[in-house]
Length: 252
Image 1 (cartoon, rainbow, N blue to C red):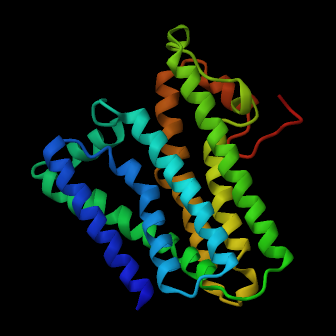
Image 2: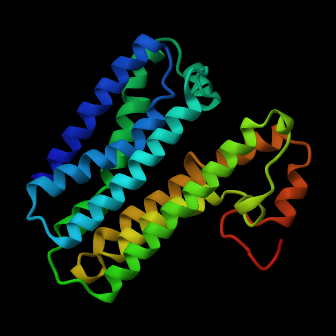
């Protein structure tokens, strides 16, 4: 029942996001909402389950990850026209996209976040004593948050410099892999998965696998690579010499 209530909270949050999109004629803010679905669920799970040191650490990590990512995406998209991804979806679903977006955009993301968030339900509800796997999971998640944050900051600084207009970022973490932010994001969810290994609950593998699939094949790497190929003439060369996701620090 607790887990189903979390779905209701996500759908309610999605509904308000959809109402805002009707006013703005823009659905891009759903990107900022994505991580907040998890924050909402984590806070709910923490408050209705027996709090423990473990659940406190999990919730703290979710808050740091979720609020940081939502703030970054809000800043990046502020006062900008609708993202090209959503413009394409809008075009393919007219007429009446403004109503269809309630389930195509907002409803779908709320359900996906709830499904991936099943790992938080297991992790926060786990009252077993801390073991070395928990410590490893916390460290992997924390490293993922830091790595993703540094990559996003480097990209933001690069784009903010007018001298870099039309140029491709190939410095910092971006010279070790083409999508260091996505690499950090995937680490976050595999880290949460590691903290649940001692529970004996086997369906917890769904969450990191689904998140990895979404990033690699659905809304992340594949879509972005196609756009970058059109945007930068030299992207083929960058592809050949730099890893897609996993950083190769030994080969730059």
